Structure formats: structure tokens, C-alpha cells
Image 1: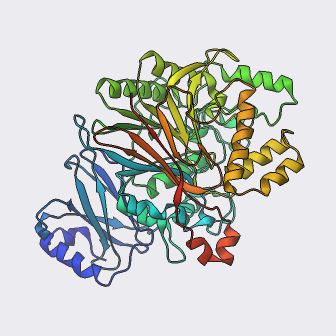
Image 2: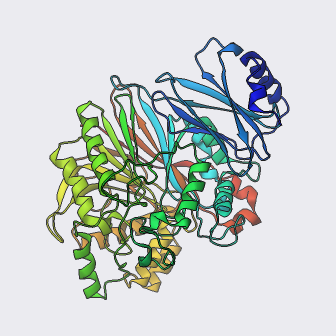
Image 3: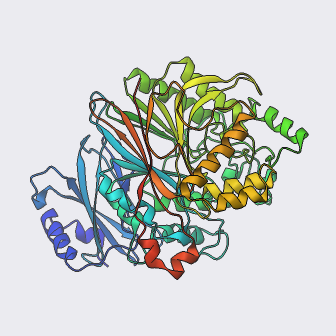
Length: 564
């Protein structure tokens, strides 16, 4: 093995020359390479070797004169091939394109990638980025995101459920329990198959941000609750679920497999968050946008009992009253306070758009199966939205995932159960999944059938429709349920949001895909595009892989929003 001490004795010129030679015959690393967690002056680079070796990172600004002497290098020893190598870069130039390359031991593997550092606040440059979530390993290689390469993205956000650790797949035949099994689940998602590695291509060609939701560990777990409240964690002695061995293993694997800088919260008065892993991020991209990436899982209170129908009036009343308990939290007091401060700072700095990335939807969708969403933490939802309204913070867009379909709606809040709705000048888009079987549409119809909202004839009629017809049925069913509580119907029509629907509908519940956000440098007009493909199953991948690979992302929904 080539050791770092040996490499340091070589000139950058010699190293770069070795890279050029390696590129001619070396294979790509097993999971490609990645860059992420960027600021205007820093970034994290990532690579995984499939053998014990020395990983060598080279990087340089794209606008150098092109000589090999411009490159800087960093060697990292890889002792365990299951643990990726990461390095942190500092002192980068704001608003610059960087090229980087990674090889192992001068040629075992070789790959090249690039990323862009954000511009400093003070001018408009335009911005384009993507968001998705929910990727199940057995549905790889994810053709739904294959067009991200051609879109020229400044960054991409993986908004939770990056793996399904609690769902059997070819990599792990049962729920992941050990750190080795959690790593295998991440490697499964990031490995190519059938001649395509869409995730690998995405990670190598733009900056990546990522956060967790629940399936990085276990479905609907509440990190801030006591282990005794959840039988899956009950036989431990820790004070909070986020301190248990299972959560620690899941989060360790997540941090290992994403280009995320490892940070801890400061010492605070709240023991559920004090010195715990910190995934909250606030980033500025010139004066075009600010992005706030939340952790909605690690510090939340125990969920309320889920409502699956309207026949149990007592539980329904207790649920509605319980959601407005001001002592219950999803984000934790420290993260909530930081979000509010950062939103206000962005407004005062004159940043046009503020994107709040939260794995769980904040829009009102009704009480059915709502305990895990912000609907089950309505007091904190009200605190966030009322703060935006009271502080007159403009152009706030919430971006969520988790539901496996796209839903767009303007936002309002209530200060008491069943109280009057107070509109806020903000909206949310729930983005669809990279790949999750089954998508939102068929799941929502099944929930409606189980709740007695529709009968078998209507469900059969739904199954006979094309995609557009099915989307319309899901939209109507959602509007009916939300209408019972006086909530807004889906869409931005009739609201204070100056929106123009250009293609599709504000509900897209039957595709795999991702959402693109494009801010015009001059007008600051925001264009939102939902890209999607027809969904498929793991059985279809096995039976007819060519048909799955032939599915190319197309525009499913597109709308524009003018800034205030």
C-alpha cells in the first residue's frame, strides 16, 4: 500500500501526472465520489475504496490556467473498505466551480467530479437546485434522477429516507441492526446496476446536502422520546431514543456515506439536543436564496395515537386537542429558535427566497394518518408560521418529502383547535420519491378505502384511469378530507402567492422523480418543475430491466412564482 508519508515526498506535478495516467485504465470507485455540505469557502469531499488503500484527493478551481501545478492533493488511508474516506476543504473561493479527482494507490480506481461554492450575499446570480427523498435500494438504479446531470444544478438536497433500513432488500434480508448492515443499505442505494448509476452520477456532478428522516433507523421513530415509549427501543437504559445504540449506528452510517461535515450541538439546557449530532444547516446562495435544512426526527416528542378513520370520535377529539399542546415539539427548542433567527436574518439581508427543507410536510392535509407530520405537532407549526407572518418575512417556501408524491399548497395556521385559519404568505411543495413502491396515489386511495371514505366500486374506477385521471381522484379525495376542517384545497390559486401553473396539476401522486427550483438572476422569478417517470416495482426491474431503464424523466408539473 502507498502510505501518506510516501506521497508527501512527491511533488503535486508528479501526483497530477499519475492521475492523468490512471484515468486511462482505472475503474471507477464502487460508489463513485461526492462533494457536499458546501459553504462559500468550504466543502467536504467523499470517496469509498473497495479495498484497503490510500485514497488520494486532488482538487483545483476550474478557472485556473489549467496547469498541473494548480492542483492541491490530500491523501487519506482507507483501513476498512466499508468506511468511506472524507476530507474537509477550507479557504475556497466563493462562487467558483471546483474540479476534483480521486484515485487509490496511483490507479486502482479513478473518478472525476465537480461542485460549485455559493456566491456571497450582495448580488443576484441566479440559482438552480434539485430536491428529492425516499430511495429504496431494491428499486435501483433510479432512472428517475438520471436527467439531473443535464440540468446544470448548483446543488441537490436528499431530504430524508435516504435508505429504508427497516425494509428487507437484496443487501440486507431483515431490518438493519448492526453498523455493518446499515452501511450495506447505503452502499446498495449508491451502487450502480444494469449499466446505470444515477445516484453516483448525481453525486459526482454537483454539491450535495442531506438530512435524515425515520427510515435511516426505524419507521416513525421519535428521537426525543423516552425509549420506554417505543417497544423497538424499550430494553435500553438511555434517557432518549436518540441516545440508543440503534439510532447511533444508523446515524453513524448516514454520516459515513454522505459528504456531511460531522458537527455536534452546543451544550444547552435541553438534554435531548445538547451535544447531540447536528444536522441543521443554514446556507446563503448570493442574494438569490437562503436554504435551511432541518432535522425533524432526532429531537421530537412521542407521536400522538394515529387516526385511521372518523368513526372513533373520542380519539379524534383527543388527537386534535393534543396537537395544540405547546409543550410538544418536533424540532426541539434549540433548532426551532435557530431557524427563526436565521429566517429573520435572511430577510434583513435582503435575500429574496427562503427555502425551509423539512422532511415532514407542514401543510394541512387532514387528520388521517397525520401523527408523524407537522399536523401532529400543530402548536409548533403555528409558532413557525405565525413568526413568518408577524415578522413580515417574504418569499418563504417549505420543501418536504416523505409522502412519496408531490403536493403543492399555500399555508395558513390556527392558534387554537378548529380556530379560524390565518393565512401566511408562504407555500409548500412536497416532493415525490426517487423510488418508493407504492407511490402516494395508490397508498392514499387505500387509506381512503380503509377509512370508509370510498367504496370498492370507486377504488376499481380509480384503478382503471390513466395517470392524469388518478392524480385528479387523489386531489379530489384530499380536498374533501381537508374541506371537512376548513383547510385550503390543493394548489396556489386564489391565494396571496403570485403563481402561474404552466403544466400538469399541483398534485402529482403517481411518479418517481425529483423537483427542480430555478431562480432567474434578473427577475428573481422562481420556476418549479416536477420531473417524473412511471413507477415500477422490484419485480419489474428483475423481469424486464430494459423497460425500466428506458423510462426517461419528463415534465409532470411546472409552475412559476413571482417574488414579493
